[in-house]
Length: 305
Image (tube, rainbow, N blue to C red):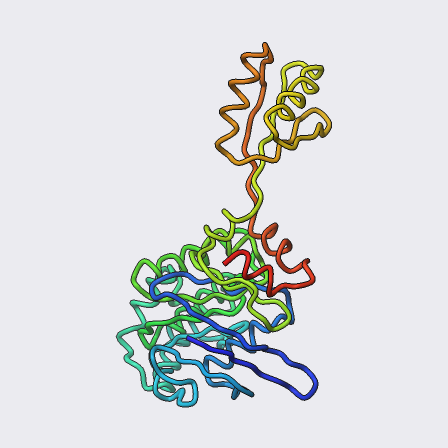
């Protein structure tokens, strides 16, 4: 999709040699802190700004000729703007006229974003989440193959975030490729299959989210019925060559998930009753900071690839 794509604004290198390869039919997450280069990269892909160097293709067409692919792309960049005194349906009708789009698509896209029941209500009565979903509906009017959403859950309450998740997953289930950019890592982890992680204009990880999380540290947390048995558990772990430490009323063990059963067996054999045993896994947030907190992010990316 992109190779060595860069964009410089005078002294600021906003995008620095970005490579992107987004599989078709997935919900792809594009994550990074504010100012990392997410929006600039999206603007490059949409032909809104020209790259300083590098090449990219969208739906098989060069970004040097956005007119060749933009009618197959739907996009929601930042907060959508609508006429508040008009209904959701009327706003979409205006857009179909301006874009010379098929008016018969309106009912379809309203259903896709779950707004059919409120289609004839004025937009000024919509919640923020409903306005965001109407923005997605507008992006779907061209019947796109690719939908790009920039911070679609920004400012939404939990209910609005849940609704937006449902919309994005529904699009992917219909075979539409979705690229969603966000700095909310937990939301990306909840909805996306594929991940691109950017920091200071450079991609530091790209691939399935599952692969990234599996590469991160897992651990085991054990609780003993009697606190005095924690020291015995610690000795068992040391004898097995596992690093462990007592943390308050639990024992934290640096080990893979499969060793939890072995710890349970050894504890039982030693006459120790466990009141709790669980596996802890790294979150996307943990993985992100594990990569970006290192001085050499390029080396970290290679280690996780």
